[in-house]
Length: 246
Image: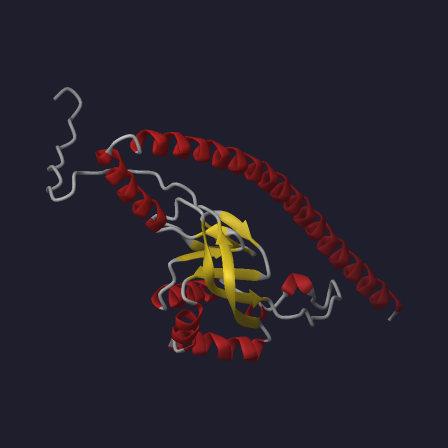
């Protein structure tokens, strides 16, 4: 019995040490992410400043002629639709948050390292909210300050949720610009939102929404242009790849 007790104690200590090692590695990765995110935020601020200066110079040139002014109006509408400019207005603020942790923190018997995913907000939950807001008539949407554009993806990578390839953390604030009353009514009438509300109640997720008189959303990233053709014309036929020596 004494030998068995010693073996149990050694096994427990090794398991605890293993968990502690994983926690240290995770803490180091979190520090790296925070440091890289700070650098990215600084570069994004510089980009926004340069973008503002470029826009100001462009508008000044286009305003010098009637043709340029018409082009500026078309461009302004396209920029709003592509989430390329910041917007401000009334709308709806939706908050999703993980359930309060209740798991045993015993490093061997189970704890936060074995957190139940059912008590966490996943990418699909955010997708449901965003799609319901678009369907309700939202003009612009952001998640934790990340603006959603035509090509923005919401994905689950490991333990992190990525919006436009940038991590966002709990709690998740989804801001939508539009008429608050119309957004609220149409949003709540969505069957998907009703299902999400039921899931949130069952697993303890925080799911709240509130109308706001003024919300500010930043500009989104500029998508890369892979190909383009004049409007109203058929795309040119693709030429066959040339063979070596042919």
